[in-house]
Amino acid sequence: MATIGFETHDHHACVSDTMAKAEQRCAALDLRLTPVRRRVLELLLAEHRAHGAYDILAHLAAEGLGTQPPVAYRALDFLVKAGCAHRIEALNAYIACAHLGQDHTPAFLICRSCQSVAESDTTLTDGRLGKAARAAGFQIEHTVVEAQGLCPACQPQDTL
Amino acid sequence: MATIGFETHDHHACVSDTMAKAEQRCAALDLRLTPVRRRVLELLLAEHRAHGAYDILAHLAAEGLGTQPPVAYRALDFLVKAGCAHRIEALNAYIACAHLGQDHTPAFLICRSCQSVAESDTTLTDGRLGKAARAAGFQIEHTVVEAQGLCPACQPQDTL
DNA sequence: GTATCAAGCGTTATATTATTACATTTCGGA
DNA sequence: TCCGAAATGTAATAATATAACGCTTGATAC
Ligand SMILES: [Zn+2]
Ligand SMILES: [Zn+2]
Ligand SMILES: [Zn+2]
Ligand SMILES: [Zn+2]
Image 1 (cartoon, rainbow over the protein chains, first blue to last red):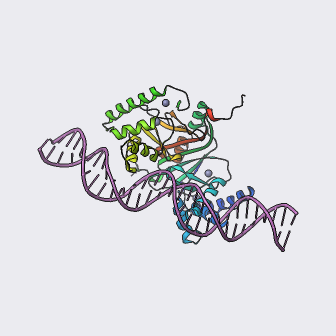
Image 2 (cartoon, chains in turn yellow, orange, cyan, red; image 1 turned 30 degrees about the horizontal axis):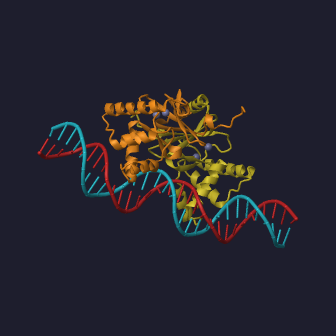
Image 3 (cartoon, rainbow over the protein chains, first blue to last red; image 1 turned 60 degrees about the vertical axis):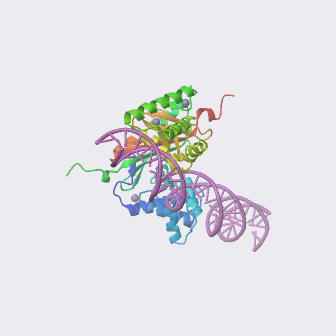
C-alpha cells in the first residue's frame, strides 16, 4: 500500500513518469491524448491536490486553450474515463491518478488544512465496503472512498 | 453489520422508530428539532434513497414551509450535524440515517438502477481506509465511503 | 485522392447545486 | 421584562455541471 502525496519525493520525476505512462496508456487503449487533454493532465499533476473544473478552465483560458466550461469538463471526463485522473466527490474536484498503470481501486486522504490529497493504492475492495456489499448481495461497479482530516505535516506537534 | 435499505421491512415502524430516536437525540444534545427540521427528516425518511436539497425544498414549498434554498440547506445541515442524516457526496444529496442512536461510521451502497440507497453500519475505520491512513500518519476526521452498483433486486437474474 | 463518418472542438445557453448577506422573529434565561 | 443567541424569511449571487448544435479534423474505405 503506497500513499503518494504526503511524502516528500522527486516531484519532477513524478510528473514526467506519469505523463509518460499516460501516453503509453492512451496509445495502448487507442485513445487520443490531444493537446488540451494533455495540458489538463499536466495542470492536475502540478500539485498533489484536487483541482476544480473552473480552476483548470482558468488556466486553459490564460493559455488560449479554451474559455467555456465544456472545454474543461470534456478533458476532465476523458482523463477520468481513461483512468488518468480521478474525481474527488467530497470536493467536486479532480486529481491526477498517482498509480497510473497499476490496476487499483483508489482511496483518498484529504487534508483540510493544506488541501493536499494523497492517493492510496490498495488493490481490492475487501475492506468494510466489500464486506458490507457481499452481505447485502450488492454488486459494486464503482467505489468512492475518501477520508478527510489532517495530514502528518498539519497535525499539532506534541514534541516541542 | 446490518445493511438497511434493500431488505423488505416494516417501513412504517422504521419511520416512527427513527423519528422517536431523533427526538430523543435532539433532546439529549439540547438541539431544537423545529417544525421545518422535523418535516425535512420525515421527507428524507419516506424512502430509503437520497434526496436532493431542491427536491426537499419543493416539498417544503408545496406545504408552505419555505420557498428559498437556505430553508432546505439549513435544515439539512442541521440534521447532518445532529447525526440524523448523512450527505451522499457522490450524488450531492441527502439521506436519513438508518442507524440513529448507534455510534457508527456510515458506508453506503447506491443502486444505479432503482436509486435505492442502503446504509451499512460498521463501527470502525479498520478497513482499507483505516489502514492506509495509519500507514500515512493521516488523522481521519470524517470518511466518505460510497459504492455504486446494482442492488440485489436490480441484478440480472440467472435463474429463469 | 476524395467521400464518408466518427471523434473532437467552439460556443451559447441553461440547469443544478450551494452560499452570502442582512433584516426580522422567536425563545430561553437573567 | 429585557437581553442575546438561535432560528427564520428573503433576495441576490456564486459555484458546479450539462444540453444542444454546428464546425473541424483525422482516420478509413473506396
Ligand atoms: Zn509528486
Ligand atoms: Zn489512481
Ligand atoms: Zn425503512
Ligand atoms: Zn447513519
